[in-house]
Image (tube, rainbow, N blue to C red):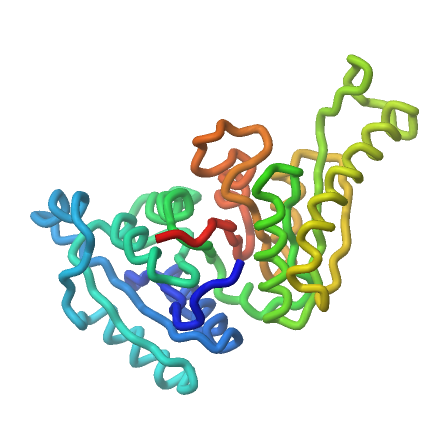
Length: 290
């Protein structure tokens, strides 16, 4: 999970309240991780959108009003963070995904300046699906000051180890612990769906799940042996359990793909539902790639 130390945190801005919340979250993250911050505004000039969708956003201006205001604000409030501004002229989701190949992490608001009142904005959804590095989706600026452990969803899928490692990194930055949550809803033992608490089938299902989660955590513990890591095994729909945790956790970490998804699925169904319904910041543990 090592990344280039000079990679900046990338934050998308458009002047909306949600993007301001993302801007402050990203600045705090840059300060605690001693990384630079890149503030990007994709201006989305209509007649260039088609060209932008098939090309890299390499040609860009240095400044516009949205970026000027964001950079000036950060330089006053976070003088110890190295901030650069960048403006592109393509579609926001496309340009953020393209630039993400150079970034340590992408931070974006759950909604943008679009008048559509959707639960999760199209840009945030597309970036969470396609980015070349981890993505954090932010809703409420006040959520950045929460204490307590980082919560990570674990499902025993091949990507779970990487997801836990990201949670450990985030906890280490905050000086806190990690709670790995495995929620189960329907389990089958000897051909029957487990429904009776305390029954032998129930105990067998819990034992199997504990062993499965334990293997994932054992594989991830060496990444940050100094960070406390505990487990919660919960009966409930995974998305519901993680959304409930998002009401108080400083960060909920989910995998890019889940145990039950197709091999080519870009964002698992549980992760997608958590992003749509969460009440705090959610990180999607995407692998770094160029």
